[in-house]
Image 1 (cartoon, rainbow, N blue to C red):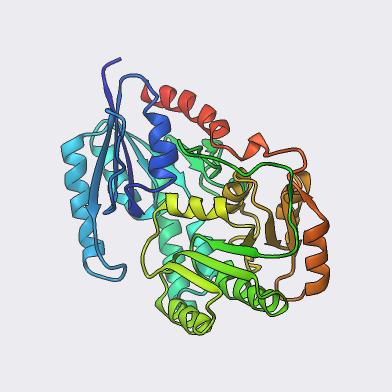
Image 2: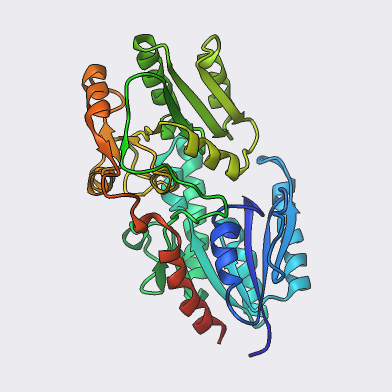
Length: 375
């Protein structure tokens, strides 16, 4: 087999994105006779990359700007330069251009469905009711149009197999499990928390739907009872009104630290925070777009043996219970004293860190599929 060129592309994800580069990209580099290319938003290029891995940070614009539309031309020019044999598109925004290229040239197309974009638009409150329905209909129209010519679908969530109508049987579930890094060092298990200093952590995307203000509320209540309780918020907030409200809410509260906020935080820095805190908070607010999904940071917290406090949800509760990884509560209605007692009496990760949280289980699914598609 002659050398094959694989291009992974996303409009908004950075070229060093944890899924597109750190998981899919590095796994594909293991295929013999391939050159892997990653196109995405401008970001620092990882050092010591494999010899067959190439980065193209071709996108750089404000989220609401004309340059976001002009970016399609830059993407088309890159396609003409690389001439990929296989395209793995990691966002709906590049589907049409990719579909047209694959129809015109000899190239296979895989769609990495990282979110149920249409449902997100209708269920969340990022846009007004009319606009979000128009946008959701536009996204689903593009997906339906391109679906018949897509060779395979990667699904980041099991639930998408039932939620998304256009994938039929051409899919593989690749969950966002944790990819071990060179300096991966989990805490010893089992884990027992003792009264005294408690370092709470909220990491990843900062948004109302993910419970940022509920996390602050819990930290405030606990700190009032125990002044040694602190909260670290580390991640990026794309919604300026939410960021402004967050900054106002934590003003004058020195026990709450914000890292990032208006800028992306390197993923290794987030992992370091996970490794050095006592409890990870996942106060997701009930929403149709998230309650059937397993958050990436749930896998990350479990991989590091971090005890977890998570919003009540049967799917999440079953996982935490099976591996004694944490507790689920209603972040809007709970007894603080009962919660504190439960935290200090529970033994977490009594059987150690489960293998099911690691990416290698997903990588084993990818390579046979890619060999088949490329041949």
